[in-house]
Image 1: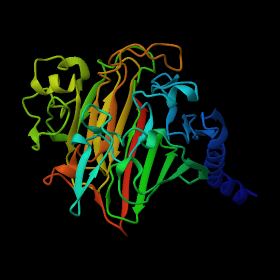
Image 2: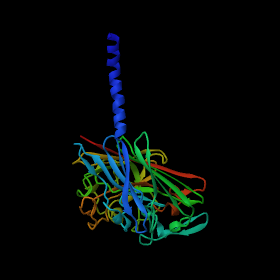
Image 3: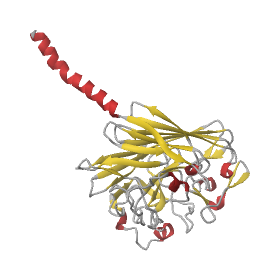
Image 4: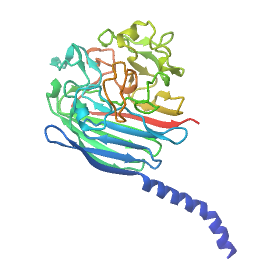
Length: 380
């Protein structure tokens, strides 16, 4: 009898640990509801992913948009930390790409033109004389095919889309697959893959606007940001790269040490003037293709932190410079200038026209792969 008592004392902690793991796993859920219909009558879905810690995100198959992302602060209070709308109709209108998947090409292509294999391709010019974020109807405005998926890491939604040859002027039938996983480590993980039947260019990214105080809760100028980049991509007045990479040292673009976004954003720097603030690609240190830390953001009043890990060579840091207070968000609050910031992991702008930049050419028979992770925590 004594032996059984000893065994029970040894096994009890292990049994409790196993039970805890089972309970935690049971708490991770994914549900699918209706988010309405497009003007063309297409049914749009909303997927709600909840992990074992109560962190929750909602994602729609319209534009692959992250509609909400609720994470705790240092006191355990949950807030939605991404800007967006509560209804589908607002997402269907021209706007600032809140929470969307971006493609075929994230960022700008100069004058909407590039040459590949000796053939010039002409794209829509939807940003002055330039092409931006895939054109007039980019991936942010298409209906993706969605499905739920349970993984060991946490609940996931799989989105697929066939971008047909010639869509928005791009060559090749591009088959795209994006997996959003809400892990039990409080990460929103995004895995991209794509194949083509004809050589093309591809540069996919994600466009959430973050405010770690909570969406609609003021500006983001007090957020402290650290970016793992010794260099950035200078731009002209049309936000097209000048073709060189500049060192951040001694400039307002030096975020190698944690610095408040607002500390230098209005300095009389030519590059800040060209971007109307920060709207530049940073060259992430380390070897592209390997998952590495790109940036960290910290919000002092809530203690919330967000790390960004990526396999991409660059990250666009955008500070909501063109928000103007005319859009009303999910909580009924207006979104004024600089009320959200973006960390868009990607290749550099205008790469198809910049031979010195890492290539964005996707060859027939090859597979495009990219991973980005947004990891959330709260400092005490």
